[in-house]
Structures are given as C-alpha cells and as structure tokens.
Image (cartoon, rainbow, N blue to C red; front, side, top):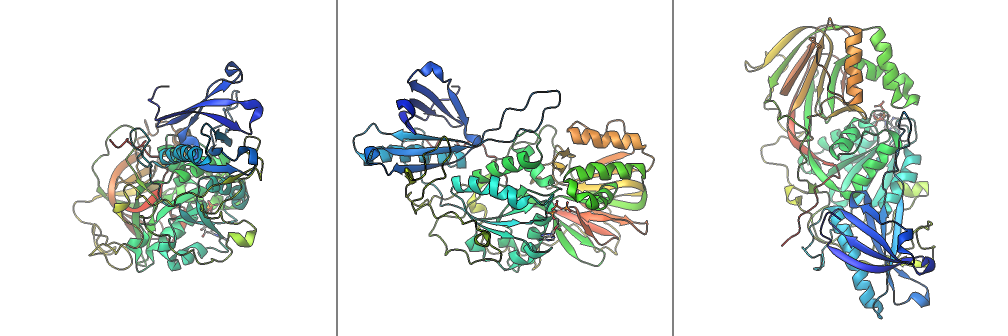
Length: 580
Ligand SMILES: Nc1ncnc2c1ncn2[C@@H]1O[C@H](COP(=O)(O)OP(=O)(O)OP(=O)(O)O)[C@@H](O)[C@H]1O
C-alpha cells in the first residue's frame, strides 16, 4: 500500500459465506480488502479505487440473529479488463458491490457507529469532501443532490432511455442522488422547460442525448431574466447522442482512456456521481440578423459543418455517421471564399492541460427545498420511481454480492448539511453581476457586424476548405482536435485549412485527430491561432454554418468568449487534503 491508511478494521462479510472475515484499509484513493479467514491465501487482496466507487450505504439486518450487527455496502464500477487481441475492443465498466458486517461490539449502537464512520469516510473521499487527518472526527456530508435529467429519446441511435434505465439510474440510486427524468417531446422542448423551472429546486441539470440538447439547455437558461443566477446551475452531460464531443472532453480531462458508446456513458455517469464542478467558458455568437446564441463547443464552416449536417441522413449509424460523411465529403472537396478576422489571445502554456482544483456541485447548506413540482413526462410516467429520500429506510436491489432482498434494510442517515467547498463561487439564486444587461453578458470585444473590426484584430481573406472555432479538446467523442484546450481558459482555438490542401493531406489530418496523435505537421495550408474573439464573413453565397453542431443562419457572424460563465459537472477532482 503506497499511502497511509486512514482507517483500518476487521469485518465479516454479507452474506456470511462460510464465516469469511476481512481486513479493510481505507486510504485517500483506495479501499484494500484482504481475506483473513478462512484460508487467506485462497483470495488475493482486492483493491477498489475510490475513483470507481459511486456510493456507500449503511444497512441493518432484519434477521433476529444479526440484530446486534451493522452493515455497510460499497458500490463500485471498475473498468473491465480490456479484451485481448490485435484490435482491443471496448471494455466498459462492471458493477462490483461488497457488503461488510460490523459485529465486534456486543451492542448494535456501537457497531452502527463504526459502520457509519466507514460509510461517511468513503462518501467524503468519493465526493472530495475534506476529512480530518485521522478520519475520526465525524465528517459532515452535504445534503443529497437533486438532478433534473432531460432525455431525448431520439438522440443518437434512439437508445437513450434504455441506456439510462440500465446504466444511469441504478448508479444514481447507489450514489444517493435523487432525480426527476423528463423525456423531451420535440426540438426546443428542453429549452422551453429550463426557462420556466424554479432554480432552487435543483442541484443540477443533466442532459442525456448528444451535444445538441445541452445547447438547448444553455440557451434556455440564457433566455431567463435571471440568466446570471441560472448559469450557476451545475450542468452535466451523459452521452447518448451521435455527436458527444463535450462528453469526450470530460472523459479526457478525467484522465480516462478514449471511449465511445456505453463505455463513455458509464465513465461520465461515474464522474457525475462524484459531483465535482469546473467553470465552463461560453462563447456568445451573433449572426447577421442580430440573433445571439451561446455556445460551449464550436463554430464551424466548410468541411466540418458540411459533414455534420449532411451526415444527418446516416444518423441510424451513431458516431460512425461522421466517418461515412467525411469519406463522402473528401471525395467531393469544396472550397469557400471568405474573410476571417480574429483578436489574438496569448499562446496557452505547452504541455497537457493541468488539472484544476474544482468546486463541488451541490447547493449551499440549509433546509431542503420543497419537493420539485411534477414535470411533463416525468420518470413516474415511465414506471421508474425516483429514489426515496435517504431518511426513508429502503431495501437494496439484490445481486450475488449483495444481501438478498428483505434481509438488510438501508438506515436513516443524519441529513447532510456541510457546505460544498467552492460553492461560495455562486449558487442558484445569486443576483446577476452588476453591469450585466438582460439577455446575457455584454460582448465588450465586438463592434457591430456592419463596422470594420478594430485595428488590433488580424484579418485573412481567401479560399478555405474549413474554418473551425473550437473551445473544447474534442470535436467528437474520439476526435481530439485541441488537446491543450481547457474548460475555462478563456481561449477560442481557431483553426482553418486554406484551399490547395490535397485530399490525402486532409484525410491524414483527420485520421491523426481521430487517433489522438499530434496533427497538422507538414500541412502548410493549416493555420491554428488562439483567439478571444473572431468574425467570419463568408463571401461564397451558399454554405453551412453550425454552432455546437446545430445549423444557424448562413452569413457573417462574430463571436467572443466569456470565461467561466457556466459550471460543468466534470467529476474529476484532486483528492482533498486532510484538515489538520
Ligand atoms: N423528442 C424530440 N424529438 C425530436 N427532436 C428532438 C427531441 N428532443 C430533442 N430534439 C432535438 O434533437 C436534436 C439532436 O440532439 P442531440 O445533438 O442532443 O443528439 P444527437 O443524436 O447527437 O443529434 P445530432 O448529432 O443530430 O446533433 C437537437 O437539436 C434537439 O433540439
């Protein structure tokens, strides 16, 4: 064991399976489980990484023979070993739950106290809440979170609901997260919904679809009169669409290997249970008609937006639609005449993106708000019931490693009330910052589209194959286009490819991106510049412009970045230091 254990104890197992006993050691990052009896040599020491743990519950047996014992169950989703072979396949995560019996004291109350201590310590470490150095002092946990889940049943290959039921909801129950799940019924439904919700009722809004549904949520929140307070609402994304770039970025920043499909969804769901937040840059984009929208991902013109929109007809293929769309577009390569102007930003520092200390996702301490008002097509309409509040005893679903139903029941926990570190940054309900206009922050770097750009800007004119403004690492779940991007660095990564590039050179560039390899070396037509703002003026009369993969009106547009305007549930947090 490389780290000092915070807690060490000897416990029985549940079910009792031949009187097995285990020595448990809890460090800041791992739970070590060593069988003591019978035959300790028969079972190698198991190590559960807390990064794979989503929750821990205290339980009590209904059996009179076990009346003095208390129990704690640990729920983890470690990655499956990657299948061997020349082409390693996807691995995904496998649920692993272990229940331990605390039975050394003759009195139930004393065993319960010890079980509570272990459960609290594990939960604190999973949630990034500071523990006392010896883990002896009772840690005060924040109150359970309430999330609004918005699911597009037609996103990607139409599997969002099925994936949510089988992979997301069970994990949330184990993490002690309450939720209300709403299926969207049409485009813009999510946008309308979030313009009307009461912010105080939710600790986060999470979309289950592609990037498009989160785009709706961001813009719905921006339409509110209290937009600045609304943007303090933690936002999360669980990838169930065909374009899952932001989820790819969340996965990357957590240090996880590239993933697609269910594997990416499971990774993001585990991270969501951990609850850590990062500030998220938003880019305000103004089009020729004066319409303004807010973007968290990209503005694209030419090759990238053409592929995005044209490949809609292959949406039944999921993410593979982009590969086919790319091949088709490469065969008929177009160029577009236009003018690209930008305000340069200082070059970001080299090297991998540093992990920032992150805030927690949950609202400030205080009494629980009233239960959320019922929402249309909410989870109860679907026969899925939100988890009861943790105060209510409940039986847990049975699995081979778990107590059989009816044997153990969950115990009431003291309601959490600790503040979440970093929540002072703002909670839903804050007043908008003074000086900000209704309808979003002022674009202080931009002059009206009809006027020339300021003299400090750089202008390029010519024929382009593509222009892409990206502010995340990923352009698709596995397309690592800007490895140095961070969620809140306040930089637009502008990238353009001028006419004259060969099909082979463009294909090489895209392939390198897909492999996560460095790209663009030896391609003189490629330009990459960090910017704070840009203006794009297409001179070719027809074409496609997209913002976050959604088509917008074709014509001149301009944009500027607003640093850390929103908050994203990223889940990855450094292990908290012990308080002295
Ligand atoms: N119930 C619904 N019926 C039809 N469209 C919907 C519904 N709910 C959301 N939408 C719209 O579906 C679009 C696609 O959503 P999203 O990007 O999240 O998923 P996706 O599968 O990755 O799709 P795409 O790749 O086309 O962007 C969004 O523009 C959203 O407005």
